[in-house]
Image (cartoon, rainbow, N blue to C red):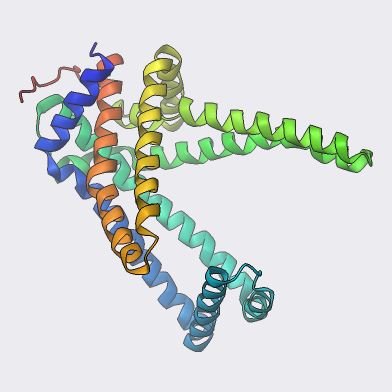
Length: 303
């Protein structure tokens, strides 16, 4: 079993030797943008291009006002609501289609990315053929597992129910505030624990070719047996996000540099951060779990 420091070091080497690992994440970005464009075209055909342009113009005006004034753009929001109201049903359907479509795209290529990371870790090299093979094998199961996980997160709302009940049965602001505060604390802890505990799920599912429930079970069991390793990798992810966010705030001082950072930051995330993190998680799982049908033998890295 590799030490965590070796997982990070050897994982970085694997990523360095296989720049093709960024392809799934670039494809996610490309196809989601393309899907959004087609959806907007369809929406414009249904409600009219003039209406779409008017709504877009109003949204831009609200954003501009919010940027340069502390006052809430009430008039702009009212006008936007008036423009959207006749088509609210269409917008709801379009939003649902957008969410489902983007999640399916994300799931398909995420499964492929994990498959590529697994192959690169175990053999030293990978290609887009591995991406397509693992995507076809596990995309649907990963999508269904994602639905189950989303429901598990929603269950945490029960921590907020006591506060809601206290609002209805007591007039004491102090009691209401205390119960709501305690509920939010428990809900926050529930979300954090679930986020860390379920982080290995998609890797367990794709690497083991498991079904949705089996993948969730294997992922949670992996966390239970290797809590500290999973937590530290999760912290590394948070640390990288904080660093990128801090750098981004520096660039957002100037409008021109902000535009530059939006492009550069997105590229860094897609080409470097996401592939590297995927390799780290994959290597961590392979180094500590028994993988059915595959011997977790890693290539010897050299620097």
